[in-house]
Amino acid sequence: MGKGKVGIVGSGLVGKSWAMIFASAGYNVTMYDINNEAVQNALVDIEAQLLALEKSQLLRGSLSPKEQKDLITGTTSLEECIKDAFFIQSAIPENPDLKKKVFKNIAELVEKDDVIISSSTSCLMPDIIFSDSARKSQSIICHPVNPPYYAPMVEIIPHDETTQDIRKRTREIMAEVGQKPVLLNRAIDGFALNRIQYSVINESWRLVQDGIMSPEDVDTVLTAGLGMRYATIGPFETIHLNAEGVREYMEKFASSIKRVSATFGPTPDYSGEALEKICDMIEAKIPLDQMAKRRARRDKLLAGMAKLLKELDSEE
Ligand SMILES: NC(=O)c1ccc[n+]([C@@H]2O[C@H](COP(=O)([O-])OP(=O)(O)OC[C@H]3O[C@@H](n4cnc5c(N)ncnc54)[C@H](O)[C@@H]3O)[C@@H](O)[C@H]2O)c1
Ligand SMILES: *[C@@H]1O[C@H](CO)[C@@H](O)[C@H](O)[C@H]1NC(C)=O
Ligand SMILES: *[C@@H]1O[C@H](CO)[C@@H](O)[C@H](O)[C@H]1NC(C)=O
Image (cartoon, rainbow, N blue to C red; front, side, top):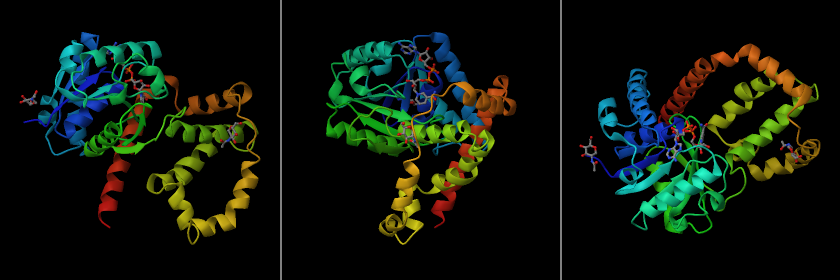
């Protein structure tokens, strides 16, 4: 049994999710951490998560929770984690010097040129984290969305030296394990998700800062409006369907988009009065000591939505 071995470096929040994702697709997973307690806790937590997922009928893949759990082992030896793995997914703290060092070490342990060495980094550029690696041409970033098990998009960002073959195979593997990969042809600060997300945060903030709307109402614009739309169709399909095609949409609306966009103004400072107002609102609704409960709610809703969309889509 087992299709091939994946090495996970780092057994925190994201490392555990990756382990579950690869195991759900039938891969053997060896999860490494410098801290033995972290590895042992991660294995216990994964088993609990798999059972809970099955109970709520959200378990991915066709294997039982036990079969999936049996595919995952833990280690505190980086060498053991890397040995014979065809894909290495790292998920260690977001610290450039630490990542540089770890990717240097991984490159030294990898023996074959076709092994994919991947980082989960949210915002460190590939030329920085892989700068000391002797295997840049097979290194790449696979940036998941938190929580990766429920929000399937993964953005793939190559190093300038990453070969076309590694880019293509990374994308194929991500799709095969049930994620939704997107590929950037070259690295850009913020990658795609955060560039788009920051433009939303930027304008949401401004609407509160300028006293146009309450923070609650801005949230509703997204959750009950744009967010619902964007969970089903993206911005290009939206404009295509909202007119007789994109061309006609732009004939009608390009001038409005340009007029409104010209009023966006400078990037907010993200401090001062607007910060106080937004914190007051959100902390009244979700006190800082109740974050875990709210994160569990988020995960449940995301998982349910992903499942529902998949079912509805396959009925067509
Ligand atoms: N949490 C998120 O929302 C999120 C989303 C997408 C991407 N990421 C990225 O994923 C990466 C990991 O984030 P996380 O939230 O899982 O962090 P985390 O703190 O939960 O886990 C990090 C783990 O790495 C271990 N570690 C530390 N040094 C190590 C080393 N030298 N070798 C191996 N393991 C080591 C720690 O013991 C810990 O278990 C970061 O680069 C982060 O930017 C995070
Ligand atoms: C993969 O995991 C299965 C289930 O635990 C195990 O029987 C098999 O030996 C493992 N294969 C490898 C190559 O580790
Ligand atoms: C956010 O800030 C930048 C920088 O000032 C600005 O150009 C942009 O229009 C703002 N709004 C959005 C939605 O990105």
